[in-house]
Length: 248
Ligand code: NAP
Image (cartoon, rainbow, N blue to C red; front, side):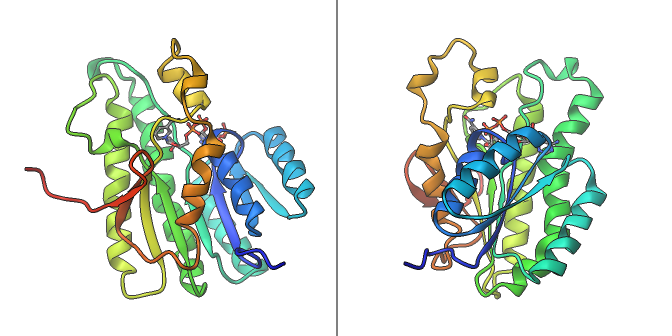
């Protein structure tokens, strides 16, 4: 039986744990060759073992997303080996400090923007030509309801500012590729049982929160060649595509 993502190349950032790991496994189950990017080599190797046990292959990309030159080299390496990229799941993100704005260290602010925003700009810059070379290039950027929620969250300024910037970046990229086969989506996963969620809500019973494997299939659905929406936001909680709207 031919799997639906057979012969498709997918890059997943933040694949070492949490949501990204779940998405990498789900894309592999659907037949994609997954390029798994994160800093923690041992965790990537465990993912590699698990994906090989499924009968699929991975390429590991141990890399710090703040090493922007490495992202340029990654694009070059993908071009040399495959000449195209079918799927980008830009999932990696950091929470940043939970503190009043006046207490945020400048380095914490810069790191938040480097990982959550600039790395995604650099990935687009490096990979756009490869996504356009696919017959059905798909990119999904993992945002947060915090980015646009009417209920403003205090003490998370790095996180909310970076995710709002990410959504603006996603919308610009979608507008620039609207007349091509490339489809670009932002998505909000809702609460997910990961290290990031535990850091934000240490008192919460993790078993009350959906696991990455519960959410991953919905992200993988946005990566399929048949996905047609672009420049919009997929919201996991309501399982629906939402349009961006001006403030009211
Ligand atoms: P997580 O468990 O903390 O995992 C984050 C992933 O990002 C890890 O694989 C980590 O790998 C990678 N990463 C972080 N900094 C990196 C860097 N400098 N270079 C390369 N990789 C880096 O977080 P998660 O909960 O799975 O979050 C995934 C995405 O979902 C994030 O964008 C987050 O904002 C979003 N989100 C999560 C929730 C939730 O409830 N969990 C809710 C809304 C949105 P290494 O440490 O190995 O590098």
